[in-house]
Image (cartoon, rainbow, N blue to C red; front, side, top):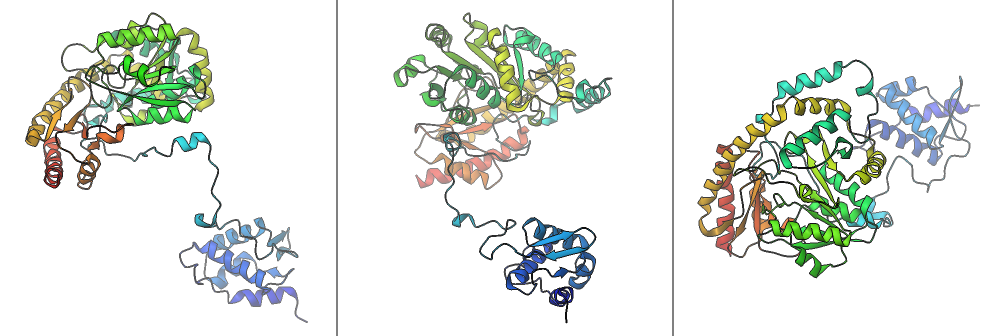
Length: 498
């Protein structure tokens, strides 16, 4: 009489793992599927003993680890049981044939629609993000690593790693290292006129995170927030994801207009602005409009989130004072970042909040992601305090000014096809087409040739005149000139079609 072991061994010895539909699968999955099929078809009877993984691997010509993975998956899904010291056996009551295996996903087209939250649905329109080369023209707000003092930064990182004690290797304070908060407070006071103590500085990963955390503190779900139109898309999507109703306010030559905001949404509780260098149009918010917005915040008990993403770069005169420096009612939350002035992967930004919001903001940051990496914070604190950051700003201001002028000169080759927006500060400028066209098609034509020219319409909520947003900090003058030739070809093609 044949025993169950011999039956199993005979059935498995000639197992074919190259069946239809399995060829593209990893070997372990193919072994698992064939064994599972043999069990469900009765070829491997309930209670049959499977060969050892060593024997099975030799029979199939695969590694023992591959068979071990397949056996483990069969055990996990109830087809096989393992007995200590006795081997692996087909289960007496394996799962029924119509039960889908846990290791194989059902096609998305066969699944019922998922129910998403309103927050997830608010993010459906987000255009997404991909990694970008630091030398790509004309990516807005992308710095150049050519001028970053890597040797100094490397030394400061090594010094931080050698610091005695475990402080920089453990969980850090949610609001940031004390020495970095002190350095930031001194830097923004000297460079931007911001009035604060180190206790009011909260270190974050990005302006987007700072804006979202601040919005959670000062608004309720369903409240209305004003944003600039056109404006920075991630900020807008972040506000929508926390449940706010976002209303775009058109931007003109004086920046954000309180009058226009009240006309479209008088009930607004929050306003997000880029007053020093409007993103993406580049205009400065006029003094009169700054005063009017601050008065609204005071009288209506509203809140202003000031995104000062590149206010350190100004090419005629000193950088403008921050809106927060004019605030006497403690209604402005000032937000800055090192991701654009130093390098994107540093992931250090900050918010300066009124004193009574400091602890709530710390709590919000702690819940969001705990804290930022402490080693980079320690290095950045010394980088600022030792004067390296100020030196870096002076050096990059001069270099970016040269690149700005190279871009302005290159734009002359477009003739009357565009008008150029303000370019007194920042790391990018906007151009506006003087003829009817689809700026997204022009941007796509540039992209196919390796030039990252952003369509102005991608920043808009309401339709508006077409244009392009061109960053110049990230590319050398020679690259700017060659990239402009690509833009010119795309513009001339669109103009001919029009």
